[in-house]
Length: 361
Length: 252
Image (cartoon, rainbow over all chains, first blue to last red; front, side):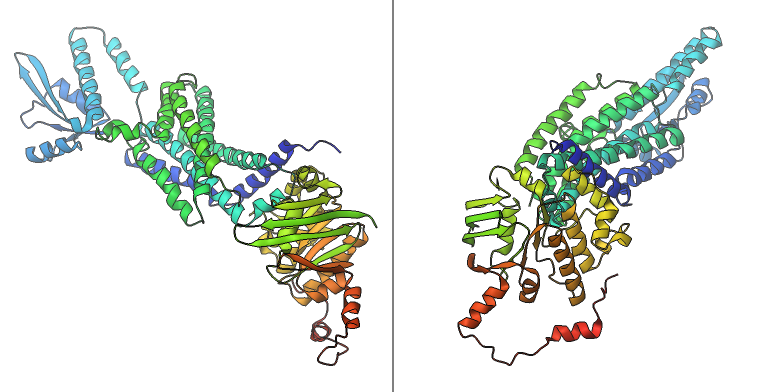
C-alpha cells in the first residue's frame, strides 16, 4: 500500500469546498457585490474626482488671473450662495475646506487662505494647490516661456488622486476582512453542526489538513474575487495601478498575506460561537469597527485625535495603507514591510487564540 | 472462525454518565454482527470508539489486529463508517462527494460504479439534501464503500425509513456481506436484527447481557418456558402493509 498523502486529502477538500463556494451565490456577496456597490456609489457621487468646497470672501477681487486659475481646478468647488455666518459655521465643521480672499495691494495680488483644523488634509491640499497657482502666475509674469509652465501643470494632472484610488483599496481590504472572518467562522460552524467534520474524521485525513484545505479554498475564492474587483476598478473606473501589472501582482501578494491573517479571526469566531446566530454578532464585532475606523471610507487623519490611536492598532488600517502605497505610490511588497510586520504580529496573536478556542465538536 | 474485531473490557465514562461499563465481544470475519439495545444503552458510543472517533476510558479494542490506541490512521483506512446522522458537504453533487471522499481515502474510484451499487446512479447530479430518507442512507452507505473496507460500521441504518426503504436497505447490506465484507451494525428493531444478523449482542445500561445467534437466543428463551400471551399469528401487520403497498421503493 502506498503511503497516505495528507496533501492529496487536503487538495480534495479544497476542490470540494471551492466547487461548493462557486455554486453558492451568497458567497459572492461579501467578496464582490458589497465592495462593488460602494465603489459604484462613490464613483458616481464624485465623478471619479476628489472635491473640496471652497468659499470666496465677499470682499474678494474676482476679476484677476488668480481667480480664473482657481476656478479651473477640478477638485475645487467654489461656493457662492452662502452667508458669512453659514460659511464660518461650515468651515468649523470641515464641510467647507477653506475661504479664499484675493485682494490687490500695490499691484501685487495677495491671497488670504483660511483653512480649518476640522479638515487638516483638505486644508493642506488646498494650500498646495493655491501655492501652485501663485507660482505659476508668478512664473508666467516673469516672461518665461509658456511651455515650462504647462509642463509643470501636466505633472500635477498626472498624479491626480482620484476617489477610486482611495476607495478601491479600502473596499478590497474590507472585502478580504469580511470574507476571511465570516467565511472561516461559518464554514467550520456549519461543518461541525452538520457532522460533516465527524464524517471526515472517520477517514485518515488529519485535522491540520482539514483546516488547511478549507483555508486554501477560501484563499483561492477571495483572491479570485480580488482580481475581478481590481480589474473592474482599473478598466471601468480608472483605478491607478502605478506600475501596471507589477503593481497588480504586488497587491495580490499582499491580499494573500492579509487573508491568511483574517482567516485566523474567523477560526476564533467559530470557536467562540455556539450556534449560527451568534456568528454574525461576534464577527461584526471584529469587522464593523474596522470598517469605520481603518480608513476604508475616510482617511484616518480626519478622525479626532483621541480616536486615532484606536485606528492605528487595527490590522485593516495597515492593509489599507499598504494597498494604497502599492497601487498609487508604486511601492513593492518589500517597501510595505512595516505594515506587513504589524499584520503578521496580529496573525501570531490571533492564531494563538484560535488554537486555544477552536473546537472540533 | 477468524476474529476480525476484539473488544475487551471496554469502559467509557462521560463526566456524569457511565455510558459503557466493561463490555467484551468478538466479531468474526464475514459475519453481520448486531449490537442491539434501547436508546441510550451505549450502542453508538461503543461503535464510535471502535471507529476511532471517540476516546475510550479503559479497555482494549483490536480492529483486524490493529490497536485503536496506536494505529488509528491505519484502522480508518480499512473500515467504512456510516454515522447515525452525518451531513455531507453542502452544494456538492453526489458524484463530487464520492470524489471528495476518494481523495480523503487516497484511492481512485469510479463514482458512477459506487453510486450504481447503491442504486443511486440517476441521482449522481443531485445534492445530498435533495434526497429522500432512504436515498440519504443509501448514499451514506455508498461513502463507506469507497476505500473497499474490510469492515463496515452502520449505526442505526434504517431508523426513520418506511418499510419499503428498510427492506431495500436490508438487501443491500446482505449483498455486501455476501461479497465478503464484515458488517457491524446497531439497531433497536428486533425484526431487522433477526433477518440480518448472524449474531447479536444485546446491550443495556452499558453492559452486554447476551451474545449469540438470533435463533439460539429465541430457542433458549422458549426452553425456559416462555410463551406469548397471545396466540402467534402466521403474519404480522407489516406483512399486510407490504402485501398491500408492494415492495417497490417510494423515494425515487
